[in-house]
Image (cartoon, rainbow, N blue to C red; front, side, top):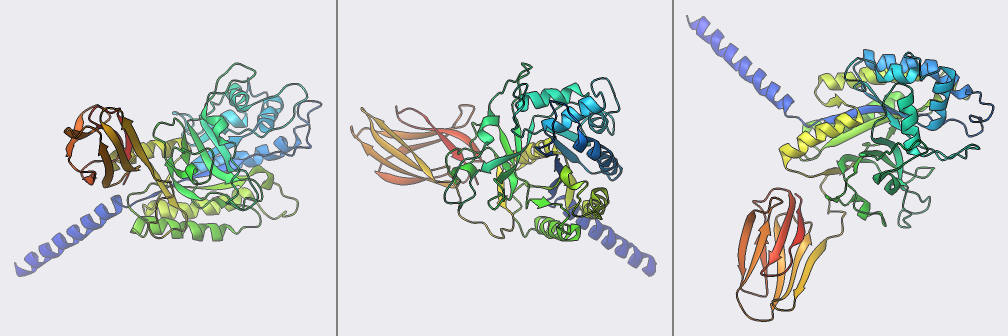
Length: 442
C-alpha cells in the first residue's frame, strides 16, 4: 500500500511538472518567421522589344524546386515579383491560360485558402519601357492575370535613400505606396503592409527592426519610428535582416536566428513586444557563375530543417507577411498595445526614439493649457493659466466618447496619473477648450 501511495505521489508530481512546463511553453514569446525573395532581373535583358526572357527561363525550374520544398517542410514564403519576371511567365508559359505556370502553381500550392503557403507580393523596380510606363498597380494586375492573386503587401522598400551618414537623412520611397495608385489597366492598388525597411546600396543604413507599426514621419529618421494611429498602412520589420547569398554561410544565419529566437523565448527580450523576422534570398543567386557549387534549394532546405527544430521548441512560428499581421492583431488586442518595435541586438529598454510633443491650447475666455508628454505612458503633466479665476476641470474621454477621468484644476501646474488606462487613443479637454488627441503607449 505504501509503495502504491508513493507511486501515486511521484505520478502526481510528474504530471504537475509536465503541466507546468507545457504551460510555460505555450506562453513563450515567439518569432513570427518567413522566407522572402526578390527577382531583380538584369537591366540589360530586353523584355518589351524582341524579348528572350533568358533569366526567367533559368530561374523557373529552381523556383519550382524551392516552392515544393517550402510546402514539404511546412514553411511560409513571400515571393516578391517585379515586372520582368511576370512578363517572362506570361509569355514563356502562356500563364493567362496555363494553370501550371509557376506563378499560379506556387500561389495555389497546398490548396484552399490559396496563398496560405506561398504569398505573391508585387515589387516594382523602375525601368524604362519603350512602349509604356508601368507602376506597381500594373505589376499587381499582371500577377492577377497569371491565375495567381496579388497581395496588398509591398515587397521591400527604401526607408532611407541616402548613402552618407545616417544624420544626413534622405527620405526613401515608401510614402508613395501608402496611397491608392492607378495604372495603365485602371486597376487601383494600395499597400496595406510594407515590408522590409532598407536603404540604398550598399545598404549600410538598413533598418533592422522586429515589430509592426504605422510610421508617422516622412521628413526625418527619428519620426519614421513614431507610430501614427491615424495612418492606414503598416510597416513590418524584418528582424535582423538575414540575407542568404553564396558568400554568407547558411550555418551562420541559422546560429544568429537561434540566438535571437532564444532571447525572445526565454525573456531576455521584453515580453510586451511582437517579434517578426525573415530570411531573404535573390533569384540572381539561383545560378551564380562566380559560385557554381552554390545550390539555393539545398541551402534553403538546410535552413528550413533547422528552423523547424525551433518550431518544435515553440520558439518560432512560420507565417507569411499577411499571416504575421493577423497574428499581430490578436497580440495587439490581448496586450492592449497599439504597436511594437524592438531593434535587433538590443538587450535593454532604451529611451523612446520618438520626439515627445505636447498639447497646447488657448481659449480667450478660460486661459492657457499645456499638457505633456504626448504620447504619454503612466503620467501627464499639465500647466494651466486661468484668465478668469473660475472653477476649471480637466477631462479625458476614450475613443467611444466615454468620460474616463475628470479632475478639477486648482493650481497652475500638476500631474495626472494614467496608470490605470490601457494603451490607445483618447481625447483631452479643459473646460470649454477644444478637445485634443492624446495617445497612451506603455
